[in-house]
Image 1 (cartoon, rainbow, N blue to C red):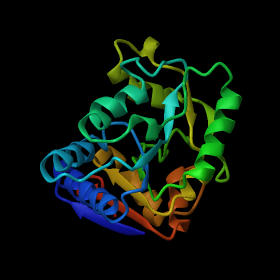
Image 2: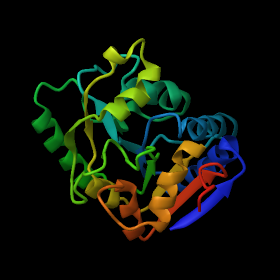
Image 3: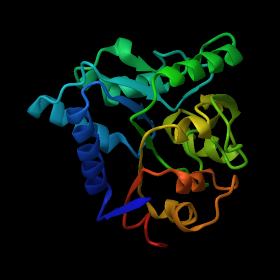
Image 4: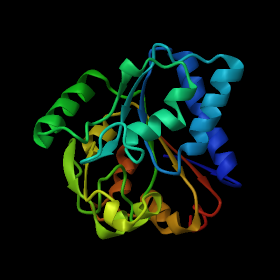
Length: 240
């Protein structure tokens, strides 16, 4: 596990983007595992800027996303499909046919989980981007999620619903369920790149890096992966 400590969020984002850009340049057919939330937005902005200014091409790149809310269509402005288009896909030369997310509006969530697991078997991530929840969750894999879990339906915790409510008009509008890659799906990636910022993540960062491996802090399982890079600002790293 490699930990890179940066001065601030912007430096963190730039460093993470450099790693992603180098991967795409060295492997134009790369499969990128992507994440949503505030943590990777800066990284995506630097990737888009580089594509425009330096011509790094994503024409042959494929993507798989960690998760999606249940009950939101892809054109809903709070869906993760919409998030990915507005923050990255609309600003690079990727073919949208090569972008993949769980379908939150699928009528049969079990069948959709099976479909996504089958997809992930054929599209193994060259890198999986992760953020980190303040309670140590990765994707929507909350504390207590089995370490051998695959794509599954998640009942969101009240803490996660509260954290995400800032993006909605009211907390009542936040979906109560999501579809998420499981921990096993994440660990199957060839490499993992995590971006973390803020003092509110410091306890989770310490537990992830130095604590015991436990389902009580799902990110701690990353200690078992051979190729993990964690880029965090000094606030997030303050307890290391």
